[in-house]
Length: 193
Length: 188
Image (tube, rainbow over the protein chains, first blue to last red):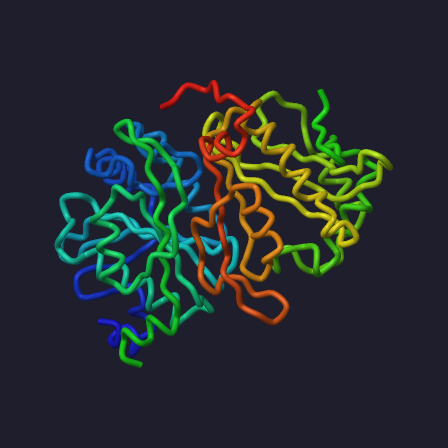
């Protein structure tokens, strides 16, 4: 998939089974549906003080879409499954601090998890950032209770870069934020370059 | 009660501080991040920023001048930002080179930490620095901060790559270091 993307620049944001495209106002309903799914409680990864736990209204989700559309030094793309042409998640990247070390996140709707879509999205993101931008260190992270995300990051070559202590409270317990990152040479080595 | 340490006072910023702040920011050594370059800040820029600050009882930041108690001389600048009430906050400090090694920065940080834990009731205080600034890391460790998180090779400064580093200090760690204080904030 990575090699295919490299061959054809128009395919940077597409793989066999999915496409990353800009969000449109019409996507509010599907975004509203999956962001409110109980499985995504605490792992929506929406900035601007949007609650990670509380139910979101359609108006709040429309506001998120408006902010995404106007946001600078970041992109927030819809993950669209080929064939069904349905939005099944979102992929975000923020280089507001420094394009040398962008921060990424991705969310796949629960109904489509564990089917390889997250891996394809992450591969597209890394390929874009390391082959089409000046990124040297791509950073991400997850709450320490989110072991699935931690395992996912490790499986794709990310290393733990530390734990920011006590970023929140869940079921009566403090939790930490696990920082992960991958350097360009590490990504190139994984690709066999 | 003033925010007062052994040798320093933390006080509000005033218009006459702006040139000092511009000078601090224009020194490649005292400013920490390439993000803040170039070193062409003017007194007017800082004055504009200062004047844009509006009155509010709901602020999430605080900005203080560090002043030498005995002489009134400006030593530097200390701040907190991103306050999540009763939860966490991030601090920053910048001092003029002539005061490095005098203990003034640690003195000012002690005053700010006391304020944050005892008055604002935060549970975690965080700070960011980088591995090219071992002096800052050492000062923070002296105050009880622990290195918690790093972004590898993400800071470019002076022709070198450094790790961006976050350090944090938990409430119970702070009170354990200050047995004369009693923590009366309820446990969660």
